Image (cartoon, rainbow, N blue to C red; front, side, top):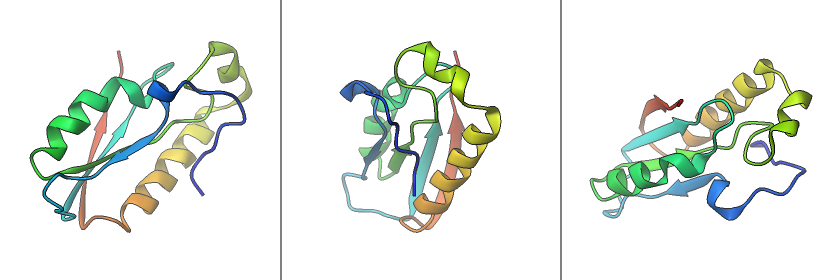
Length: 104
């Protein structure tokens, strides 16, 4: 099951799945945010890709999405596990996945 935070995450920072506008499920883009980031930073890219037939999913990595104090309670291993789980789940929805990492 994908990571579900036990803390409040503002709506604009929550994970998302934006399907392609033409119903194409062949190509998907999994977008991973950077340290202290959130899925919200890639939402414009997701809409751009959806208009071009690419379904986009951006998970929220553990400890992210709100105040930095949440990061003290997680490790990079949890981030990796969440990313791998998101990849496995998303691979059930599309035929091919392009992985994009974004860090400021």
